[in-house]
Image 1 (tube, rainbow, N blue to C red):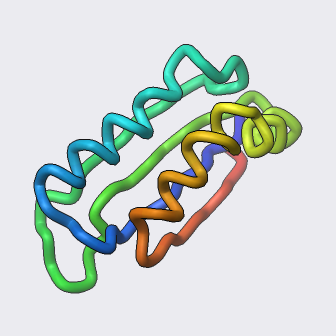
Image 2 (cartoon, one colour):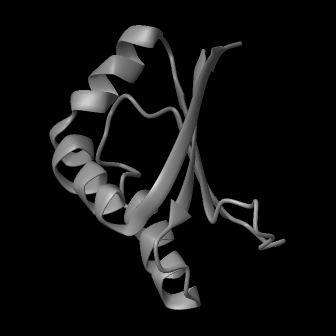
Length: 96
């Protein structure tokens, strides 16, 4: 199992923008066959060093993660949206 975690710091972290971005990420559910788990969390502490949104996804294999990266919905809808609203992202991928 491969876990893929992405943290997003939004350019404009208003409550409305955070909610809209969370919903955009959750819209992947049911559209990308490779996704075995999809979770989107919103930061509750809101400190200066906090990121605004966490995306946690899981895949059966590294190959499935790679297929997700180029999936038309992810690459064509999600990635452009996230690039447009994020000022910073960090990622970690690990095997469990």
